[in-house]
Length: 559
Ligand code: TEU
Ligand code: CA
Image 1 (tube, rainbow, N blue to C red):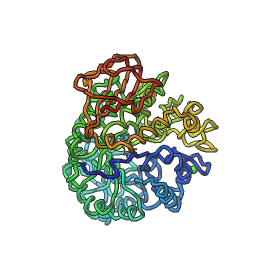
Image 2: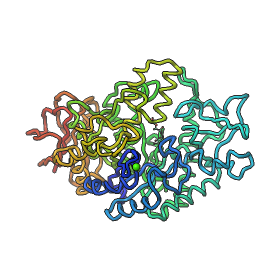
Image 3: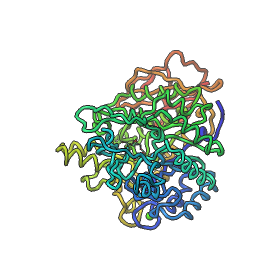
Image 4: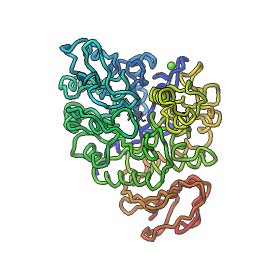
């Protein structure tokens, strides 16, 4: 297995809008991030993944870009970005940017031109089709509600937008468009950035026949995902991007890929494939999705969650590379999703961190996860900001007459704003995030959950994350050791070993609120054991057979 920096790194994702506001307008910004670089250095992370900071009308909070080579006014100017890049590099922290090239904003100059006429030179930068007997070209639904086609009167055609109507899909069949993207990527890499997280990058190759999608249940629209995920030319496009741009730099690349499976994951990340370093898969964060996807959350089973993670560990064991994440700006907070954000809040947050960070792959920490930030439950839908949530609420309650309380409960469990409330820096007003009114309210628990408090407490979740990161730096086994699952059928215990040379580490994690019996599988042999990290004061006397405490995590070095 080739040794490279991005396999040995821990990445920290910043969603700038909610990270730190430096100029009192209630919106996070680049200068605010600069003031927190020493905090991130203290945590020990190696790379920052910046969610989009480019010029944008913010229909989807920056994932709708109107100028790829300019900074969003709310976040500052290019000089601020240059300072952030320099200051991060001065601290040996790398900066990975968010590349959103499946679609642009409808306010991008390319689209403004494209929609002017059918023979405009930029027409084919986007995907335009005539309607069918007054209907859109296909029955596909948009991820953010409604049809994924928008009629444009000027040229009497529809344009495709898998996401919002202000996010028209770029046409990757058009080589001129592809070259324009590669030129922009090179411009950023020449500035000295250290890589890209690529937004829904496995959507860029569509089935050019544009067939209708299957209609599930009583949905009004068809599911087009089979026709735009992992499409016919996706590997050709990624290999071309690698050849034209990525191969010329020593960079980290991670492709966000809803709908990717482990077999495809091998093709996207295999060493000899010359495509990407790693992917974000979604199978584990989708456990418990009901017939209406994440908006109909069901109870989930640990055997399903650990079965998925184990499948990816085994699948990419000898070729390719895993990303490891619980959270990002689209997912609910993990301590609320898979932990216990009441009496076992601190124990479960530390257990979840142990479970993820001791696996094989590159770990990603989402802003606030290291503080143990939890989901939020705002009283009114008016307190929510995410267009995905607001569109779903309007469709469900106002159009379909569903029970607003049930819809709000689904938002509490899976809404994206759970991850977008301001980072809680201290117990002063607005949690020290801003001096004025924040663009979205702060989670009311900021007086108990904040950075100032955890930095002062050596037993806090923050210091636990710091120790996990240190373990990865000090022990090759954490990065390169072979993963093997134990207790496969247990619904309470996620336990596994890592092996490297003559060293073996045993990882034991309880996902239960009850004390439960742990029996060491007979095949695990050792002469001596040493506790590496644990989330309770004391450790069991023996590990052959003992009682695991609620949400207990234990990592042993066995020799
Ligand atoms: O998300 C891709 C994606 O699949 C989203 O639909 C997300 O997983 C979903 O909202 C969860 O319900 C990426 C970005 O991460 C997201 O913030 C953007 O809204 C989206 O693409 C469009 O750029
Ligand atoms: Ca600001």
